[in-house]
Length: 312
Image 1 (cartoon, rainbow, N blue to C red):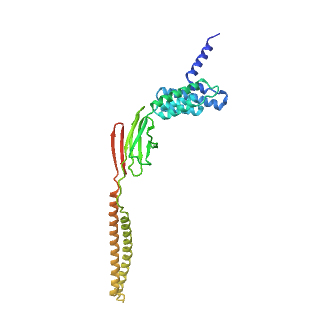
Image 2: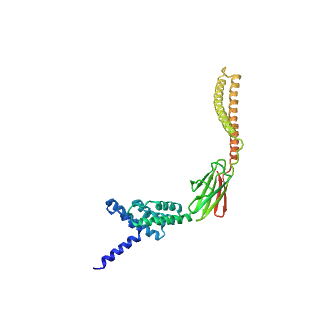
Image 3: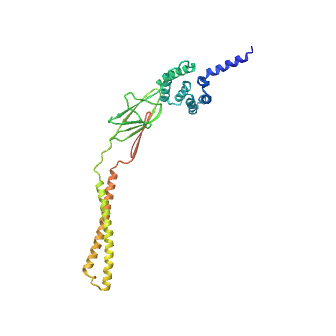
């Protein structure tokens, strides 16, 4: 017998065994044309992911593995996704996926690569349990209803701290009656990082000048309306009086002059009230603004953290 066919069969077996994910994707070849096409595409994606992972292009490798997982959804592709998540520092997500794979129930007659993938997932889960750090935030004082956020996501404060991916994170604390705090903290692997945050009460506000602001500007508006109205009446009466005196009619009298002058006086009072009201409202508005806390930002730098405290 010629040895060449046997050699080719052995090489093919080695290729399949060297790539568990690919071996798993070759299952169920009789499932139809659409399934075969999906398996073929997933196989190519895994090849691409392996090459990118070897080149440390983890983000691109992750996209290839995730696409393959969407097409076939088997333990052997899922474990590739989990290992790549761990490689790029998304340890918590990788640990959750590895735990899901390890806990999945085997199916009767499933191939050896599936069982191997579960063992790999269990080992990865154990490794990540020792690598994932924790962040413990201590708030002083500890007002009820205080809200803790890490990178914009609400986190429940606990005595043991919260599991978190290693790296830099923004920590925010909000509480009614206190100035909001925002700090940037670096969390290394395998450690519990403690962050102490001291809240500052919002300074009490003195009596409001709002009634003076409203009253002043209302008076100013009323005075302006009075000044304009009586001013227009004064100009009309003055014109009629001038014409009557030119024609020497009975309307040119001392009483008519007194009435016109009264309208002019009322107009001046109205404009004066408008000016005074605007002045009172403006001064009260300035005083109210001066009582508001000035916008400020204070920075503090310490071992492993940068803190910023601000009021707007």
